[in-house]
Length: 88
Image 1 (spheres, rainbow, N blue to C red):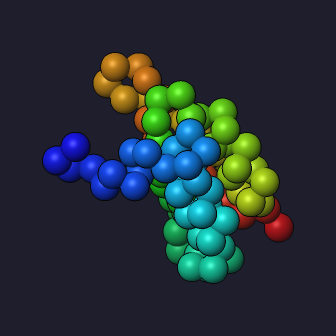
Image 2: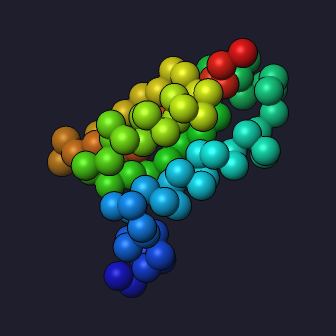
């Protein structure tokens, strides 16, 4: 479409390949302790396809994130995943 990167829309593994890379590599860029964690601000926020929530939650859990939340859009479709903390 006009606004979306085609690679994100047609990524391998039912669109999860790019999301998996972001989740897996995110720990290279996130600090273990920061002001963000102190105030319970999500450390990782991902836009997802409305059918991907359960798979993305598993990817986040496997990457040592917890406090994983799914947020729905205005049409009540799963649209955003937030991960609050990295497991110690």
